[in-house]
Length: 115
Image (tube, rainbow, N blue to C red; front, side):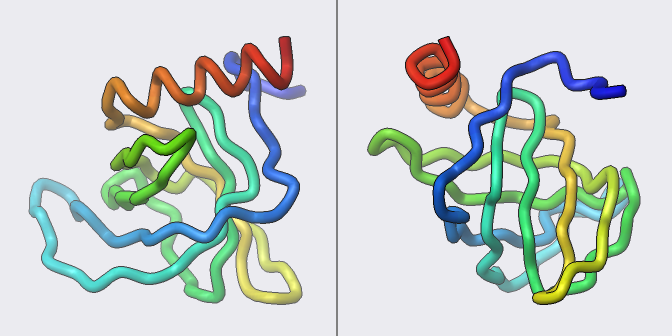
C-alpha cells in the first residue's frame, strides 16, 4: 500500500545535489558535503541514491541543497528506509524542514506535470 499523500515528480535523469548531515539528535554537526542523486521528489519526501552508507534513524537530519526552476532551496529530512542497489544505496527521506521557494517550485512542477 502506498502511504504517500503528495504527488511525486520523477526526474528523467537523477538530479545531482549536495547533501550533508545537518543534525544528530539535539546537536548540529559541522560536516562536509557529498554529492547524491535525487530520483524523485514531492512536498513531503524524496528518494535519492548515493554510494555512502547512511544509517536509518530519525535522530539524523540530512540537508539537501537543490535548485528547482531557478530557485535555490535548502531542505532537510530524515531517512526512513534504505535499499542496497548495484551502485550503492537508495534512500527514502521524509522532509521536515523546507522554505517557501521549495514549496512554490514543487507545487508548480506537480501541477504542470501531473495535473
